[in-house]
Image (cartoon, rainbow, N blue to C red):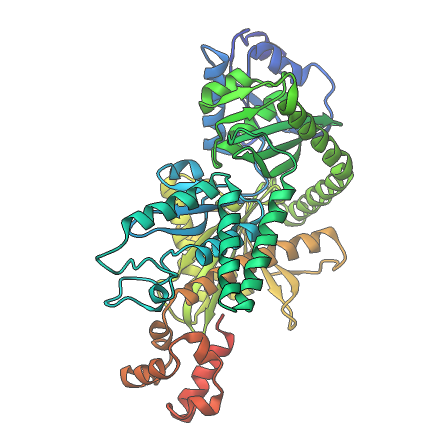
Length: 587
């Protein structure tokens, strides 16, 4: 059907864009030869995900580039701008934990997560640690073994930690700079891969506690020493050069590609990441896109080991890192192991992935048909949360093509802090879609609100004011707080959906996701408040009663453990009951 248009496409490098009947870009690709690549979509029999995409293509456009590198940059920019449904996207926005060393105003170590490590270049980060437990335990161990600062702020007098030799006296003007430099040198040496530094320190601590007959602490040090040795023994795969590098292997079969990335830090294997996704274009092109997507948000090591048939020089130019194709030795064995793992992952998980994709696609298509929509690529879901009208928040989650798109999730702290779902819904819908219009953002095909007719009406009123024509539905729970009814916004009809169907499970999954996201945000907002700010929300508690409660309990958690009778020793009966009820649900 594109025979004439294809005949005009030049044999030059560039980026091409596939569009559907609504002129929405559904795929962006790159090619050394635009004519050959575009013709391949329409002049041969397609299978799998490519076949599905081609069936949706109503038109295509292209931009000619001077080189393949320029075409790749153009492709990446367009993908970032349009986030097409068929392009390779990471399955989640998971960020790996790092151990961060902070030098000023005083030395500290902590576990940090950054969605974009590349924007944190000024920080001393060590990792990533795919095992978050290991990262936390190492940080706790470093705090116990070394005299790092244990308290917050600056004290007027040296505290107990200094007198028991667990702090160098950071609050003192006579801080021992030599001891500080020596400690910093040891910690950084350990974090850079010298495990022996910490082992010697632990052995010395253990002997010190044993000599002072403190056998309980000596036993704890022994357990920590055993843990460190176990971690060291697990590093069977390693290169003895203390270099940070990644190893990327892949395997493709039956229209799917499996990728395995190993992380080697300071020459030792610390974990990895694996992914499987359907091929839409050429396998190597989809792999290029995945790698650029991955390293746009994760640490770029000093060296990356890859297979010979990958576009190493192209990726090297863009990422400014050395790509190596090993031909023998330990590096070659590591690469072979990555390929073997990618093959095993694909063979073990392919059928499960296909079934999951089929169920998701079918459920999304069924919802589209039930609602009479011409397309259903994006669904925005909203939920509100408050406690006695306080700490009111809303959450929005987004599902694209049946799957959560976590980078599009949004949190809203409600400005009018009162227990009123109707006005809360109006506020959040207005704020979200007014901003969408201003920024010319992506419009959803469907909005689902968590609730019934009132929430639907609130949403529709705002959309009408903004002159937006978007389908609205409500998901209502039963008395057991489980998904029960789907309510159509335009007719207020309650649809009877089979509770065993894929569609019902799909709706339940979406409702559970938006509820989980909103509740977690609500808990974060509450937990960030001090005991004073929490008490501000309880009617009948003024400054005098607040001071009495703070003096007696000191923290929200201690106050939460108090009985109603204990609270009544300070507060009147009715105020005590309100506070007791509030604290019971506080997390």
